[in-house]
Length: 123
Length: 432
Image (cartoon, rainbow over all chains, first blue to last red; front, side, top):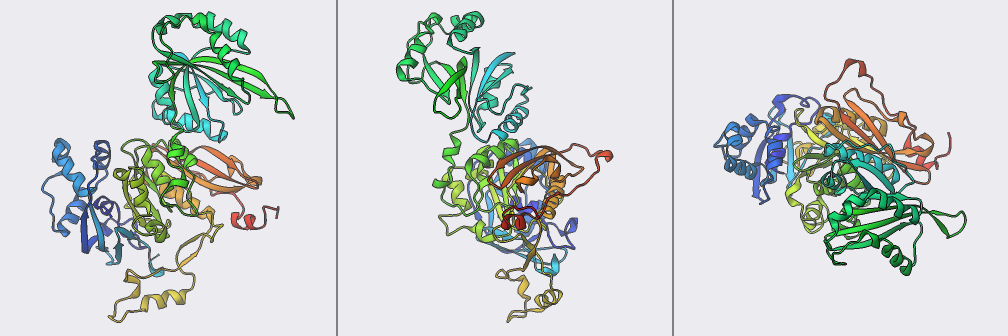
C-alpha cells in the first residue's frame, strides 16, 4: 500500500465513516519498501490538489520520516515534486497495522495489500 | 472544415456512437454524428484538419481508420466522375510523394486482377512519385460497401468512397491485451475489447485518477492504465486481488504490459463501506459489479444478532479480540443488485470530479431493457446506455456524468426498476 493511498483513506466503520477525526490511520509495526517508478508530472499536479497536507505531515511524523518542505514549496520546485513522488508513489507499506485515531479499530496490511473489511458489529 | 471518412469496425455497433462522442468531447471536437447509421461501416464527418481526425480516431477501439474524403459514388463510374469534379485541387499536392493504393471491401470482394484494374483506373490522378508498398508518404484507398443478396453468398456493390489515409485506430490494442495471453486472469475477467471501449467512453486520459470498486483480477485497471489513468482497485474478495503467487497477480499483469507506473493500489473492501475520505475525488469510475448469479451478491454483515454479539466476545489466547487479528474472516450477508446500484450512484455523486464519468455494467433481462429502468441521481446525468445483447439477457453499459452543480428541480431519485436478476436467470427468463 502506497503512502498516497494512506492519505486517501480513513476508518470505514459505521460510526467513523465521513468523520474527519477518523483520519489519518496511524501506521504501526510497519515494514516499508521502496519501489522505483517513473514520475508523471500531469498526475502529480492532479494529486497535489487532492492530498490532505496536514494528514500527510501527521503520517510521516508517525513513520519517523518528517516532511522537510511545505505544499507551497512543492508547487514552485520540480525537485521537490520528485521528492514528493518518491514519498507518495514509491514508498509502500508491505506489512503492518493501521489504527483508527478515533475508534482504535485495527486494519491489517499483508503483502502490500490492505484490508478494510469489517466485523459485523462495526458495519 | 473538411470532409473525413471514418471507417467503423463492424463490432459492438451500439457502442460505436458513444465511443466517438466521448473521444470528440475529450479532444474538444465539435462532432456532428447526424449521418451515423448503425448498419453502415462508413461515417462521413466534418473536421478542422488532419490533426483533429487523428485525435478523434487514434485511441478509438470501434473504429478502423480515418481518411481524408476525396469523393463518393454509387459505382465506379460515378466515383471517377466525382473524383475529377471535387478533388482536382488536391492532386498537385501529392504529385511527387511516394505512395501506394489499397482496396477495402465490405460484404463482398473483387478478385486480385480486378483490384489491379480498379487501382489503374485512377491513373488520371497523374501521380509521378515512386510506388512504395512499405512506408510510403501517402496511402490512397478505395472503399467499397456491398449488399448481400438475400439467401445467397452473392453481393452487389452499393457504395464507393475514395480518400487519403490519415490514421489507424487503437484497435490493435485488443490483441495486445487479449486475455488468452494475460498472465493472471479469473472466471470474471472482462474481455479486452469492451474493457478498452469502456475506458474510452469514461474519457480516461493522462494523469487521471481512476477507481474500480469491483476490481476482481484488474481487467478495467489495465484498460484504464493503457489510456494513461492511474488506478485504484478494490474488491470484497482479497484472494482475487492477491492472485496465485508472485508471478501471477494484478501486479504481474501491470509488469507484463509495462504499465507499472500507472498502478497505485488495490485493497480489500466492501462497496457498502468504502474507506475513502469524503474529499477524495476520481476523474473516472469504471466497474463491472457482481451480478449475483455465480454465488449470490454479498456484502459485509450478519443478520443474526446473537452471532454478532458472540463474535465481539471471542478472544485469542492472549486475550485479544479475534476480529482485530489479520487472520479474521468477517461474515457476509446477501444483498440485492438495485440497492448496490443505488450505493454506486451515491458513491459517484461524492467521489467523482464535476464532469467525471461513471461507467457501470449492469445485467438486465431482455424483456426489461429500456432506458427508463435505470436509476437516477440528482448529482448525476445519465448520458446514455449501450446494450450488449445475449440470448435471453443483456449486459448494459450505463454512462453517468457528475453534474457541475445540482439544481433543486432535478432532485428526483429513483432506484433501478427491474425484477430480481438472479431469480430470472435461473428460471430461464420466463415471465412470472
